[in-house]
Length: 258
Length: 301
Image (cartoon, rainbow over all chains, first blue to last red; front, side, top):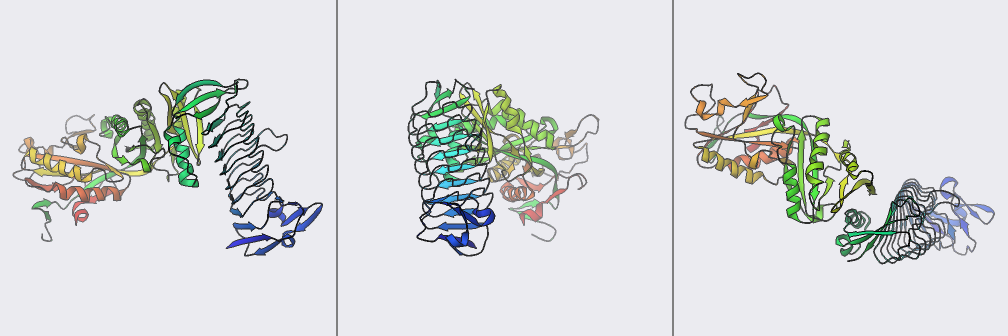
């Protein structure tokens, strides 16, 4: 049985839904409001929840999620999947900034685009995402995968500036083009650039080869996540750039060539 | 056929059973840039692995794996490995993968029993060949080790599943001539090759020197010639050979489970019933040593 929440029309204020799962309330400005006042509720509570309506001004959907399935129909506001540790969030549209911030597990799938700081740390925190997967079919803003410690960040479109900034480990794959500053201050993470990248000056060219884990990753995405990437990227050669040599220098940018 | 006899193509199927033992088994999927290199690696990995008596391990090629079914989309070969004990299985895998597959151009190695919760950290042990330059990737909850090598990078899954398995399924072809016995065995091997969950670890799948447990003369021997089935000894030992039998071949099967071996024997025994073969029988120790009993007549019925 699916629990369906439909945002009532005519609500023009921003809604903070980050506490919705824990105490069935949301913040509207400085007012705490019950979910029932904001949403039409149908169905029984359970592991499968669907949220619909004009959610562009609803922030923090899926905050702290640890299990189950949350489907967000249409576009959503900021902080989707904030600190989630398990389960699946499936957003059929685009989301605002800070999606997947401080995420430690589960799957956050965004079928549209995402704003800035996807999978990044909370302000002042030393680590961004520490586990799980984020898959965005469209573009992402700046600072995606900042300080990621573990996990996968997959972007079907382009990534903004400073992607994979100070990455500690983990993997970021961008099917489109990466903006400037990709991988700066990275310690050990991997950036797989399929659509072009401006490699920072603090990365050093190592070789051109076929990294064997890339086809494993691409096949996994295709088989398990329904995210298909052209076969030439699985069998192709990549330039391996190691860096950031201004830091630990064990990170890499794999730049697809042919 | 009567209640007392069962024949296939005029070949008697003896009312007996093959006695097999519990082993530990693993499945390794080796992929490579081409089918040839996958087979080269699998062939070398399964070399000198006919019997635990002298090789510490029994291994063989299970079947080819289509690129559609491998984790990296490349052609693959499935290899089964069996040992009498758990610790030995892990050690043999480390040795063999390290020396024969890690060294082989273009290969990558994956676990073929992902459902097993009993895991062996084989790739985790082999990763240190990277001398500190190794790195890992976690994809879909599975950790892979990237070991830098002169070719570029070798990829090996961190853990491999192991299962309780069955070793030592067998049947013997008693024929008018050694040539007839070999032809029958070859036909049986052809019928069983590629069946899932089972390998035939001996050369070409066939044993000419079947053994008995221990020795009548040399006390240190774990196994010695099966004199009861050796035609040259017919008149000087207690023989099990009927009149007119001048050559015997044996096929030994190891499988991931009882049913896999049964299926293979069901395919192999009828195929072995060709002209010149007198009888199909099996090796057992009276049912006292191994818990897995494959009754020939029940299997082919």
